[in-house]
Amino acid sequence: MEVNFHGKDDERWGIGSGLTDGTAGLRVKYEITRQLVPYVGVEWASKFSKTADYARAAGESRQETRFVTGLSFRF
Image (cartoon, rainbow, N blue to C red; front, side, top):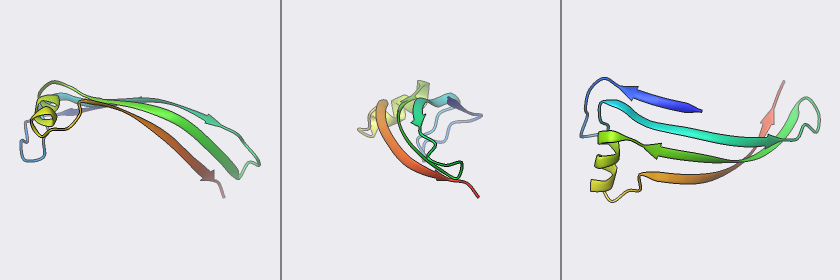
C-alpha cells in the first residue's frame, strides 16, 4: 500500500495539495529457487481531492486497475 501527500498545488503537473493519490495491491509469488521468483498480481490506484479534479478536467480516469507480472532476481 502506498499513499502520497503534497504540500502545495501544482496545476502544471496536475497535482493538488494534501492527499493526492494512493495505490493498493496484491501479488502472488512462486519461489522456483531463492534467486528466481516470478510473480503475478493486481493493483488498484486512485486519485483524490484536487488531483482527481485535475485528472477529470484532462479527460483522465480517477481510478484504475492494473494487472502486473514480473520476475525477481536475487544475487
